[in-house]
Image (cartoon, rainbow, N blue to C red):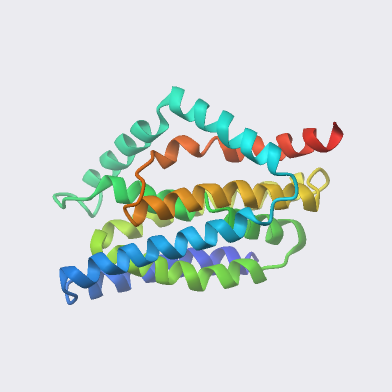
Length: 229
């Protein structure tokens, strides 16, 4: 049983519910400051992940090419439209949601290098320690975001479970082809997305994060190709 994966998803759900209940009791000033603080923490996690890179060149190339692809496909706009429809048709019907922040939350939970690295580790080796550590942080992250975004944060659990669950299932198939170096480079690539998310959350730089997601599909083959050169 994938204990780390289940625990992580459950604590995000729990954090979203707890933050929603807490949000109505906190002054708007504290809500705003908590969000900015969370952005700083996300940026710090991203920087830590980036330092894990063994080969920075394929990481940078993957981010550039992946983001160009995302820009051409206009993924941010498409994903925003999709989640807007989902929110209107679910328990958030009639509730105003800051879609810019919501998409940032989706990227943080679904495309975090730390999280994807943890899922791959559990799927390949059965070691859930990384995901169990991450789940504590994710509980706090979901709670803080839910303070300002409300119950809509709970909806993030669905794409998170699908994305990380799919990676968990395919991790066994990937295991013979993925080296520790490739995993480190992958984590660094996710770290750049996490850093960008932190800058966006804290209000330092607003960039369409969803357009960067294709980079995660390019980094593993890119890292492997670089090591063959």
